[in-house]
Length: 149
Image (cartoon, rainbow, N blue to C red; front, side):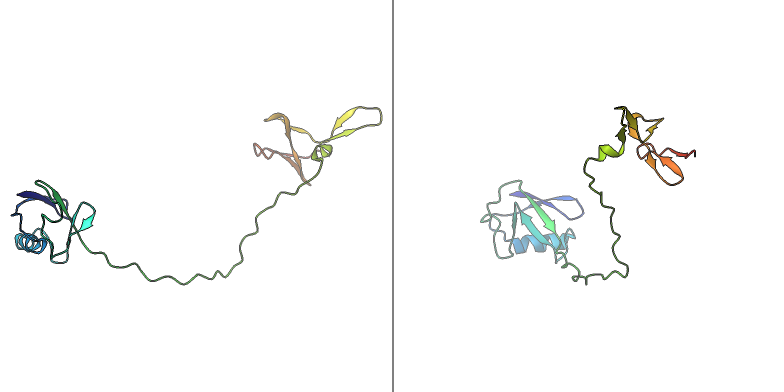
């Protein structure tokens, strides 16, 4: 019976075996040929093949493929939690203002609505400029103009 053995370097090797061949004898044959190292394991399907089993009892058929895998070392030690010397940056929180629209317009005594904030010349109507002590600033397009007194 012929089977394929896929090594860790990606090379596929064709091996001629007998039905009563054990996993250990197959492994020894592959080690002598120089295809695998003694620490490598053989996997068929989703099972790791033990050295004592014969290949037919693991339901291996003709032209089946065995995969060679190397054992992996365990992970690194768990790291100690890092203590930071500076405090976390405090994020800006939006201040909730009820009826904010009343800050943009005012109604005069004669019933005329006056706009308190000016509109952005680039963005158009509906986008108001923020009032700073020395300038007017648009938060949408980042345009800033000097205040005229």
